[in-house]
Amino acid sequence: MVDLRPGSETYLKWEAVELSGENGLAILVPAGIGNAFLSLEDGTEHLYMIDRSGNDGHSKQLNYLEEKIGLVLPVEVTEISDYDRNAPFLS
Image (cartoon, rainbow, N blue to C red; front, side, top):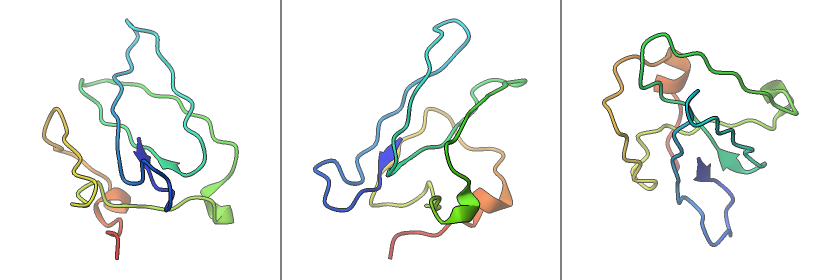
């Protein structure tokens, strides 16, 4: 999760949480906080719910390689959708 709210004390800061069947955790991500999922195992299933459609202008993209975020991943990204690969960087 990354804070994408300009003016926030934690703007562009990120935090990672491992979700698994074993730990049973779930996360509520509020508006203005970006989120992404990285599967650490083959056959991973994930379920998420949203309160608004991205088609209504409430969803934006940001490239996970954005240097201003400084995201550190636990494994190399080996597969990624074109949608995510082509996400924009901050201007």
